[in-house]
Image (cartoon, rainbow, N blue to C red; front, side, top):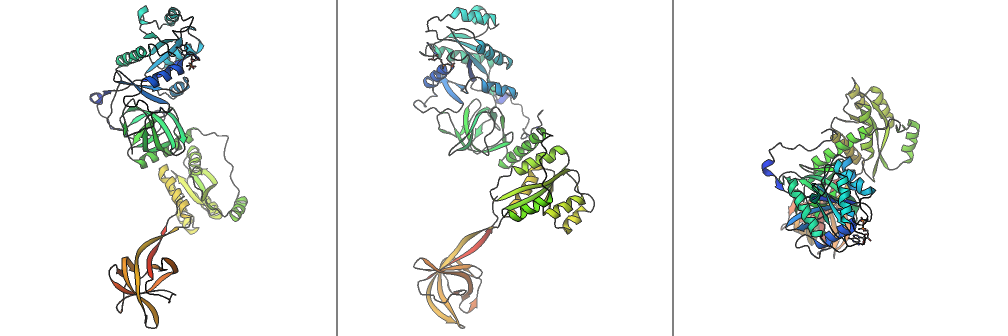
Length: 523
Ligand code: GDP
């Protein structure tokens, strides 16, 4: 696609046979105080989806109502700001615009502006002549104004659907919804509900307890729980789908607004999301999109300052926190800067990343010298090594992380950062034995035990428990079956065991055997 943004591969199939009707997506526009909010509130409260009556409506940026068994999706993003935003991005989610015009006021500047936006986006307009109950309501004047703007109403020989209403009293709102359905029918709105989901983010926010969430409208395919999504530089493993009443959904078909949780960070309103094969693919594409976007948005002027070696050494001395120092190399200026942005974005409370230098071109002996002096790692995107550099790096013990796939490179850097951390130690219980009697064996005190669960191993650790309380902890020094040394004894067997450095066993003690696992720390 023109933006160069990566999207997951889509199989090419003839979709025409798979198309099914979908709900129209409608936006309400018009001049301030002409009754947009009143109309929206009335529609929402009077036409909730079947079976949802009484449910608490939640403001999620979009909602669905039912009229004569047909669903209609409304965007309730305030004003037409959202609409314009989406247009700017070249994406349009809206099928129909309801233009609210107060009958006692007529067309006003914002009415005209809204009309222009809708026309520019090729979105048909239905005019709701509102406040028919108000004093000074003049339906003919509004129709005349419509005619002047080349959107003459049907009963005046034009093609624009139009109806008088009172949003306040709820009069004729049903007729307005019927017009929406009629317009939708004329538009023949269809989508293929099969296959990977695709749609638009209407609104996004961070919510306590839910994390980053986005209200999206599915445009094709079906969105399921567990799906992996990409939206520009954000990705999502769909944890929950929530409808406009706060109820969980299993899936969302085309035309359906739904709140999605499971994003790494909130995606931008107006952006398109796409299904990916799995979370890893989603993550990869998001990162590559991030990298590309950074390359495109480079500001030449704002070159970050390079730390000089003296300052750096001082920083190393004082800074007790783990630091991965890197020297960045890239094929072109743009990729160097973008890579730096991606690296500095790696989030960790435990390890910081410090860029000591950056440059374009193959990795040179000079780079190795500098990296060696600063105890830095070279991170290289899409560049080669000059002759002899590999052996020089080995000689100076300089680590080079190089790749021409940005996701792989970032993963290498993350791993290198994690490697700096001390491994976390985790205890894994192997089994337990009960001391039955205590005896002396070749001048050592040994506990005669019955293994009651799991296994006791010769190279394991053990804790001596007396009445449930630990009285000693150490390595198992001796493990015998009869007179023979063995490496392990399983539940149901007797053994002679001894924990190094402990002699005071009592019948009834429990030896709890465990191993200590070293787990690589997380960033
Ligand atoms: P918005 O700015 O377009 O969202 O307009 P609001 O929905 O906030 O309405 C502005 C004012 O017009 C409020 O005081 C409403 O009560 C009033 N209003 C809205 N619809 C009607 C209507 O059908 N009849 C009358 N008489 N007043 C209305």
